[in-house]
Figure 1 (cartoon, rainbow, N blue to C red):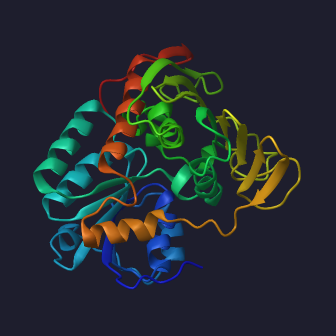
Figure 2: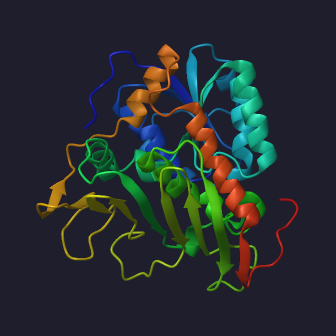
Length: 350
């Protein structure tokens, strides 16, 4: 259980169209912060689960009640991805900081608008790149890499497989104009980790491709994506897909390998198919040994740091420039990606 914060804030949620809102709200509540209410458009599939987990949080009929409440400091959103930028902009112009599910935006125009509004308002726009911020093994790996445990980091290999769970997916999930494409939606996680582990402030997308190989009936759905990244500090390979078979005990065998000049770290984030129970598996190989490291005490500093940033106007959870750069690169990868398999041309609108 997270330790309560000494200075809790009041926050609200606008848009509960993705189940990531469960953890986003839940993490802040665990820290002793107060959710004053939520608004969502219609009856999205995750709503029932949200109510079950947080029955004490009232639903409001008009989101302006939340935006105009002077005691609300932070707005969370997990709306349809294409709608998140507009919600964030409205919230920032209302004087609120914003925590958004990934992807934080789906087009270059949205990203440009977000940059302008952040500059105009001085508000925080923070994207929850949950494959780092919600994974204790990544916290520990960053600590080890920073301490020089594997020498200088020269490459990351990030694998982001996901289970489709088709019966739970709404129509927008299969429409690229709504979800932004697989490299935008899932690939942004891996880009963020590449930048963080290599210490890069910018990068080049060397190559990118997306495909639809298993869902021909949904030609707007990218079920596979890959890209190569290069910076002055390192190289990276990313593979994302929606092919996790039902036989796996978890939704995806997410892995990250960090290669250094004196060793490497492998993370098996959500499941160890070799048989160890639980999550957050870390393996360290160096010039002395090969060992397994328990990450249970590594912590998840993103949410307490975000609250501190809201109160102190700092950037301890994530530098704003870094947050923007991740989405910039993800959108660039999508724009240049070779389109393969059953994909149709990119649709122009919703």
